[in-house]
Length: 230
Image (cartoon, rainbow, N blue to C red; front, side, top):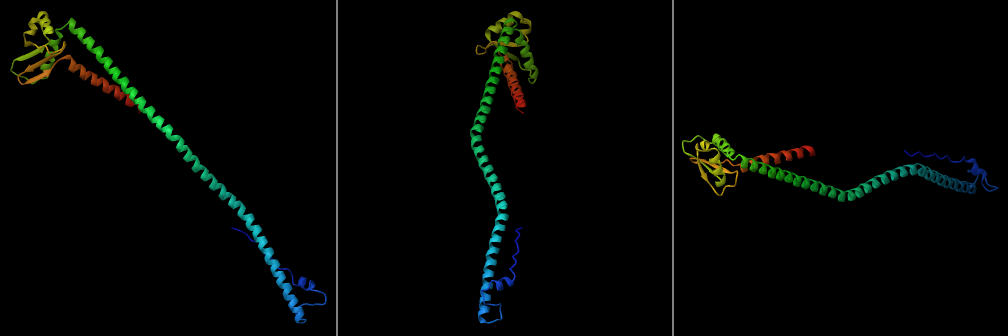
């Protein structure tokens, strides 16, 4: 709260002493009363001027620190706002770059995951082919596993095999092969076979099993990647 300095009017005797020679105070004639009133008016104006100057000085003294504090606070707030705006402008290309790097990382991991799955699939196919080349009768084990999940039927069981593998199976294990009707199918790749019983038919070959295994490997790699990112 601003404080004002009170003004004290000077004592009246100084106006009477300041009158021109030959004059007296009020009540000693018309001329002396007019002079006394004039002196009183001069004193009032002087007091008003001194009071104004004193109030102005006091107002400046009180207002300067307050104005300085408000100006400093406003300057800090405006500077902060400008800094935040500039920082936001600077951060936009950085954010875009980080998003691009994140997408690149995701794409790279996806490509690596696909390469791993493809490599595992190629190795698995080569191992299966080598194993079947040495022991083609293992196809009959696949036939037995397929029949175990099929509905029971009194119909004759037909097994379709690649012609070359069918020949070797009949040579290596003719007794076991007589359990079903083995038929050649040139459209089947080595390691593939189809089992049909009545109205039911299943793919008992290696490719279907390998595809299921590769799907599990792919899902596991994806789950591991999501766990690492979390």
